[in-house]
Length: 151
Figure (cartoon, rainbow, N blue to C red):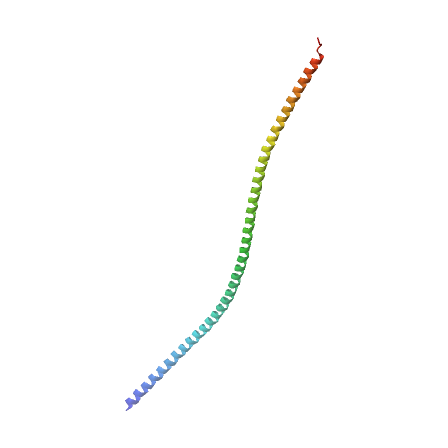
């Protein structure tokens, strides 16, 4: 029977050794789990920080997008105004061109009329000069006839 007691003692000692090693393993696992928990806590804090920063960044991005949209709309109205100014200038240029063409045509017509008046004036002067010459000639002839002795 002593063998049974020795066997039971060996089994009890083996069981005790097994329990000691299981306890050490569980403690090591517990330590590892604690470190993993701490790491996860740190990770969670970092994620919250990143999330907060991302939210701020999104808010700033939205503000910048709104500002860009506002400025773009302002520029659009400026470009519309500039287009209107360009259209007005183009209309003014056409008007100036039309006025210039009208003035040119009228001055050309007037210059033709003036040329005709000058021609008529020259013709009238020539006629007057010829008439005066003939009158002078007649007067000379009359004087010659009067100054000739009768006889």
